[in-house]
Image (cartoon, rainbow, N blue to C red; front, side):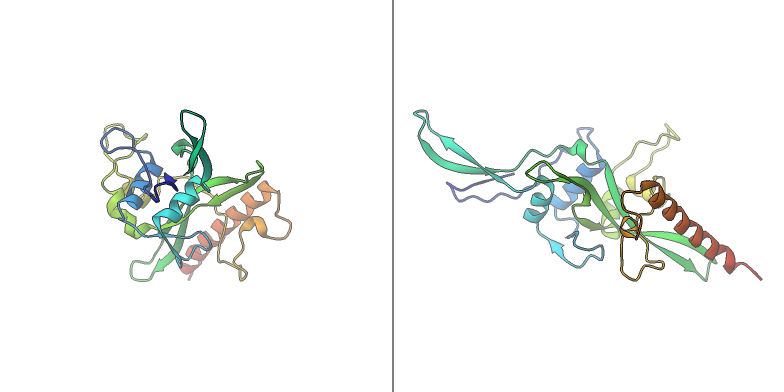
Length: 226
């Protein structure tokens, strides 16, 4: 992605792997859907899907700010400046945050989890080289992505002969995750790491996430109590 100030061009294409070349990284599928305008992207300022983003804003979130690169002719004279962003390393996107809601269906008398959104996570590093920690780059609304995910197969480590799409994987909850935020007893809408006494205490954060899972489990069990 680059912008040529000399020619007045402004290109915001998000370059991803070509189709049918065997490259089906999850982030590649996600970025291609965005580039094809198949899904609306929302800002990470909150997780409520309130602020849509343009392709250029997504490109900036992924690649960072563009930097000026001077251009010289064969005589060494400055002839202009090209703005370039760093090349995107798709292998650096291996963590994602999933927003879910837990619903109790009275008709079927069961509790189930429904995925609402997915956000790629990347460590934010300042120009001075300071690592600010992991942060969401943007959010996509999962129900809008389901038709896209249904078209791409995923490696099924539990059944080499079974065909499974990315939609099947999410609907079957064949992924690992831990709770980092919950609306239970959380009126300030804080992440678990921002609770008092939780900063820099990863074990306590993990235990609090397991405690929230237990609360949800106990809620379902209590509904069956007579």
